[in-house]
Amino acid sequence: MTAGSRRGGGESPKSKRTTLEKWLALITGLAALVSAGLGVVAAEINVEKNKAQTAADSKGADLSTLQDENSRLKQKNQQLESENNSLRAQPGSTDAPVEPQANSAVKPRHTGPLVMTSGSKADLDAPQSQPQWNLQGGDAVDLSFDNNFGLYSSALLDLHATIATYDNCRNSGGGYGSGYLSPRDFAAGDNLCVKTSDQRYAALRVSKLDKNEVAFAVVTYDPPGE
Image 1 (cartoon, rainbow, N blue to C red):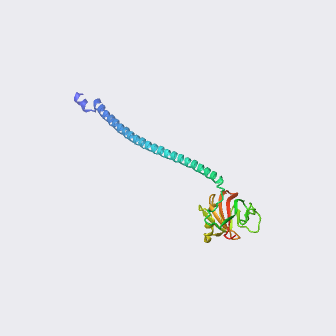
Image 2: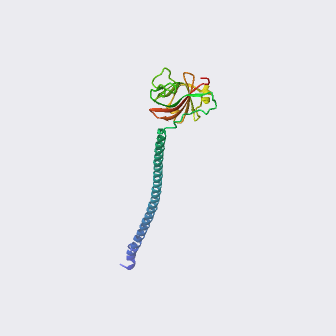
Image 3: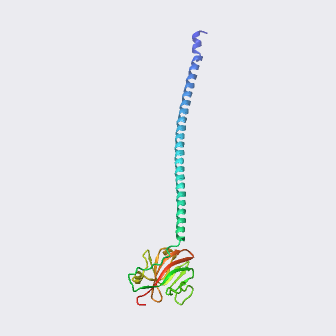
């Protein structure tokens, strides 16, 4: 057999190695591409994860800030409520709301404090010799107190911050009402007028108010000529 016939009879070992090397190079290239692609995907996932973590941290910080602010406001509200209760518990001025003597013909009939608990009834026409205003007694009742319903009178006027004087009470004839004045509608420091059963005018200043008791400084005036 000649040398020429051996060459034409099949692929040489060198050619086989070259083909294999090409396939290996192709596979290696594909693997590198896949690896690079996976690296890009992993990087994007990591970026999104970091974004999500940052957003969660930010929301957590915002929530913590809101919780701190809510706690601060609650403490402030409790402090204000405590101060308000303390102020309400303090008695107001016990000075009687005596009228400036613009009308010299008018004179006080009875001046003094009046303290009422639930169920108390007062006769504001009582003379100075009856300092308790006939509480729980007397034929005429001009003012009563119930800790649920408040003050009751057949002729009552709340002047609020305006000082109750004889002239103020007398000149407000159309403002008087019959019925209850709820504890929610008046407070310590308010000024009231009562037209009594004997047609006198009583000026009252609320000096204390709580759920069990109300206190006043009172002046009842005799009309001119009495």
